[in-house]
Length: 196
Image (cartoon, rainbow, N blue to C red; front, side, top):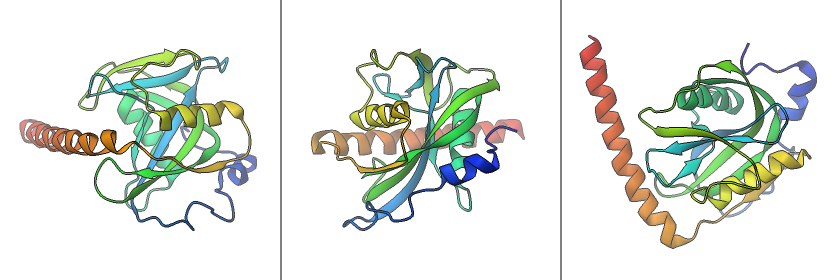
């Protein structure tokens, strides 16, 4: 079953017992989950191009109410890319400013491998998929995601990091993501009406 873990892996997926990032001055207003999906030979990572054509991203998104971060990473990867994944381990927990509004986001990141599914090239939130070598990542990939990939490839113990965005990037991103969320929600509502 996609997203399932063995008993041995369960302990490895748990976050560190004592959190250093939650003790800092931070207001967590959003929780997210992402997957660093590595190729079988661990030489390439799966990236998707968001609806903002210059922005490349890791598969992931918001954690739904009563959903475990691991399950959210599996679900979001399937929804974003069409690819089913098997979680291998927790890479880390990252706190960063939320592009969706005020406050910070806590993102749980997992290393994973593709186990099936059918890749989709375009959708409401993506305009393309690409397998990239870690030494040849696209220019539109944010430093936050570059760090997540580096941590996944390091294969060490789960990390906790706080990563700051430059303010000049943060506020325009919030406006763009708000507008795109409204547009995508309107399209989804229209599609639901058509299906009825």
